[in-house]
Length: 315
Ligand SMILES: Cc1cc2nc3c(=O)[nH]c(=O)nc-3n(C[C@H](O)[C@H](O)[C@H](O)COP(=O)(O)OP(=O)(O)OC[C@H]3O[C@@H](n4cnc5c(N)ncnc54)[C@H](O)[C@@H]3O)c2cc1C
Image 1 (tube, helix red, strand yellow):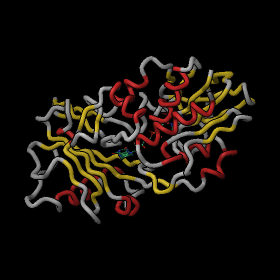
Image 2: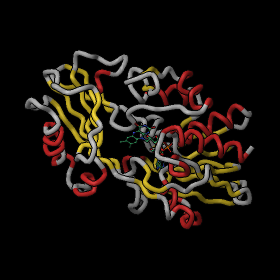
Image 3: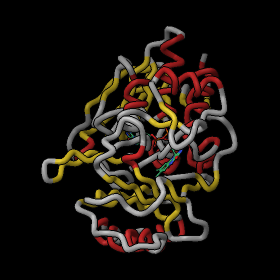
Image 4: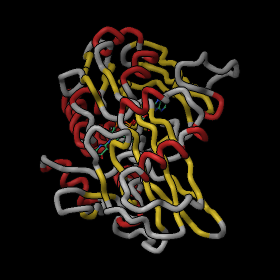
């Protein structure tokens, strides 16, 4: 049995490839569901159901492997034939790809103990643990022994979990991204997608224009550019909504109405600015491997390819 820490696309890709070879796996994730940065936020306001893809916006598949995975998971074209999204939300894709693979959810993996061939995974309730903070004082749950451990979480968190691998990970750099989700009573006088050059807004999209969404609710996702995000990084989420929506309004010829519901989410690890430059890391002696978008590039397909490369290295 192989333990896979992280059920984002990289972890799911490795898990599916190993499972297909008859190698049993167990996934662990601190989220309530698989997907990581392929995420959909749901909210209810005044009896209306709202939803926003607040992480990855759309996926491109250059390779046949990822294209087949997107087909299998029911991805549909948006905003053009070359780009695809999950239906009814982006999180439907990882849910479909996870299928019946065993997943231990809502658990923060904080320590790996044991020895090569017999690794133990110690994990805590994700509500009690924060990345970078000391581990909770409560005793962990311990699972194992595992013949190998694969770590498919963002590089800085992987370096905390596996200090022995910190050196090769030190050069990996992510841009952070403040993201505002906002619902409006009226349609905004803007195109479905915007990617302005040299602006505080890096990308904005009418999320409700994606296939399978409720087109009657006007839901927007507005991502700040890395420079704007860094300038406001440590502000509270409530302080981000108004200034970022004001930046969106500056892209509209007509004034924008106030949102009827809005929230902000800070991604500390969004798109990559510097990657590892190799598909994965596999130490055959230690029987520990690492994968993630950070190995190759800041795209969902890179995460998928990295997980597949790690599974191939093990097999
Ligand atoms: C705002 C934003 C916009 C983006 N837009 C696009 C886009 O339009 N197109 C595109 O292709 N890509 C986009 N991306 C990038 C894309 O989402 C990522 O490249 C991809 O999802 C990374 O997958 P991953 O498996 O490597 O990592 P992740 O998705 O980060 O998965 C890692 C998983 O590990 C879990 N985890 C972390 N630490 C622990 C721990 N200690 N214990 C247990 N579990 C843990 C996390 O909960 C997470 O589920 C975007 C990303 C962001 C944030």
